[in-house]
Length: 132
Image (cartoon, rainbow, N blue to C red; front, top):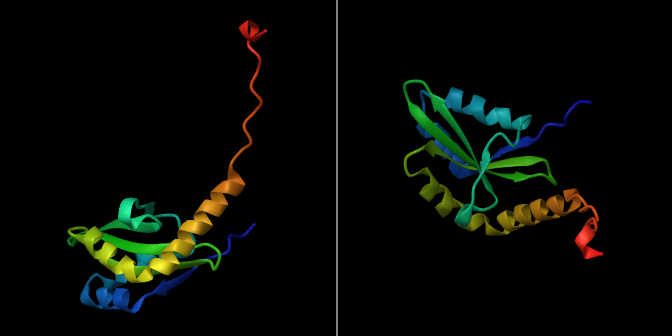
């Protein structure tokens, strides 16, 4: 069975981020494009960035980078809204996530609904001999 791919949506601010990394842009794009077939490659964030995923990777000679994105499973989209070096990245992502609050709430709700569907039913408790 072939897995359906996800569409990568680059927000305008993320496109500007990408342009600023002239020499590394091609390698960064390659990392982002991996999300088409592996959208959960990035790790889930918590706290004020709950619902956001971050893809971490290294570029030889340039260091550690991060990409912040929302995984909109219903529409099969990865919405990239921040790209940058690891240093101070999460503060940048938090600032940029605020205007996306409505979409972020949708993503969190989708995830909650999905986890409710997947929860296994607990087996019935066995009676212990002392319970009589």
